[in-house]
Amino acid sequence: MQTFNEVQKLISKTKGKVVGDLMTPAPLVVRESTNLEDAARLLLKTKYRRLPVVDSDGKLVGIITRGNVVRAALHIKRIMEMEGQQ
Image (cartoon, rainbow, N blue to C red; front, side, top):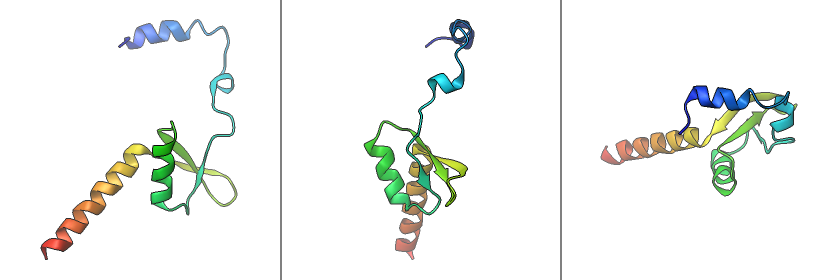
């Protein structure tokens, strides 16, 4: 793995490129109201590790990551295990 300094040197040679030159145009997004299972399915079926979350007006309100989904699943599993012990 390259060190941060090596990466900085490489990036300094981008010859004036800006973020807009490299970003994903019109990315796949989910709404705040999207079912967690559906969002998880999208993350698993695509190459994306994160999805922008937009409100009903299409305004960015957050990001959901694969890590968020895994943590939610583990939390749900713990709750189900605790309920099973009662």
